Length: 357
Image (cartoon, rainbow, N blue to C red):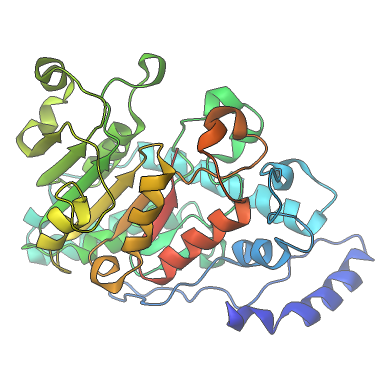
């Protein structure tokens, strides 16, 4: 993030002048570059708001303190520059969430679209994103396309207002399906890892991972392989009954705990992920509520041999922040700043890393 630090002093000076006129501003570095249709980015470009949050994370927002309030940015309107831009982002995010609902495509597998029609399909997906976010600076840019910026509370912003209702809502996630459309070649294998794949979810609610799979399917991404690991022992008949019909042909159920030891057969990176290549499209959801296993697995993904294989990662990082402590309890360790930095490092390796629920 060194490229952004050069702007700090001049931004502060400008903010002081503008605030004295009762104006609103946001100290910004250069906006992420506008992405051309056929272009990939190996670097990570955080959004303007994400960059400002990182800049103030320790000095002003106290995100490096155990038990920091991850909802302060959402509620605290006294920080005029941050609050205004954050609320603007939320409004665009909500518009994007509604725009996705109406998207339809004539195929359930974009790899089967004839080459002469492929770009047209990808442009239709571009339109969903562009109709909601007015300029690229509001989103962060990864190797895999635009994604939501890394902003507290690292889940749906309205969790800060309606905690229980929004706890498992994944409508805050942003996907650049136009970029994914161009990335997946006709010969690519599509792979989804579900680590922590209980099909019997909290209070009878639907597993959010199934909603995520529905979203990918809506945009023409059909997974050839779905590797589901679950520690809790379940009857095979119950599991079979719970697997959605459209996933049966690709679903691989492993009723064993994942392990982080690289030499273990139960390490999914060693035993399965390593058999794929960079041309394949690989998505991982990691949520096993066991940090002693999760963190080493995530650290392994930072290695180039794995980061080059993974396109999207969804990970719930349990840290000690004020509003989530009641849900995570003793499993939480570290600070909100630790979490922000971990997701930033993952994105810098090329993985489009998302904070999960």
